[in-house]
Amino acid sequence: MAGLTALKVFPNPTSGNASLEFMLKNQMEIAVQLLDVNGKLVRSTNREFNAGFNRYELNASNLNTGIYFLRLLSEEGQKVVRISVIK
Image 1 (cartoon, rainbow, N blue to C red):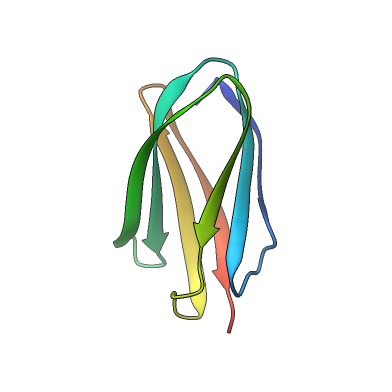
Image 2: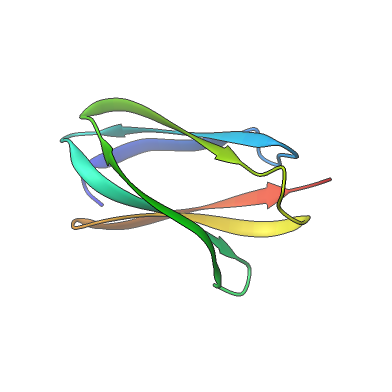
């Protein structure tokens, strides 16, 4: 995803909420998908994000301890970041 930069997730590991921050060159619709370590879709939402700085809050309080992957998917492609959930 060429127009997406400065992608970071914190705190990582998390036990409650995690913030996903990134910059976009252009306004676009992005599917934010949470996958478990086996690639199974746990949660998904589609949202329109503005050009510039964006923040998305992930509520991880109801997730089991483990490794997850946050996938940002758009017409331009995808970016994936790993997140750890601890209890």
